[in-house]
Amino acid sequence: MINTKIIEFNDIIDAKNIERPMGHLTPIEGFKDVPFDIKRIYYLTRVPENTIRGFHSHKELQQVLVCLNGSVQISVSTPYEKEFITLDDPAKGLYIGPMIWREMYNFSPGSVLMVIASEYYDEGDYIRDYRTYCEEAQDFF
Ligand code: TYD
Image (cartoon, rainbow, N blue to C red):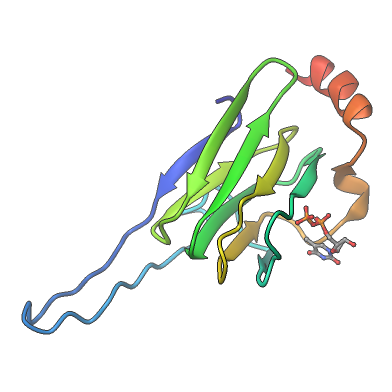
């Protein structure tokens, strides 16, 4: 979908000894693995069952969402299209660019959703009212 994409990170298994697995290592570098300089990271943890978060868009912020543990579902939409994505792999990220309405739901127990962001927190960059979003997004796209 426009202004969204799945990014596959480098999933380093580094199996020097296949008899003894050592786990996965996933590096994420600004401007290399994500298409922006990283200014902020935050994460959602201990989200109760049946909670829906998000319900907003950003005017300029770019983000990459990575589910580090468990699973979470994301819906991304514009006034013209909508897509549903399940994140359940720490080696994959969902890029969300400007003017995408997002909702996050079905957080599995113990899930950890990390968000990598291109800007510092700025409440002025949010559009939290859906009607305002639709009006501004119609001009944007
Ligand atoms: P919000 O972005 O609305 O969370 P979600 O979309 O996951 O429901 O943020 C929730 C609250 O946290 C809101 O009061 C703003 C605050 N907040 C910060 O202070 N700094 C941040 O970096 C973020 C993302 C949120």
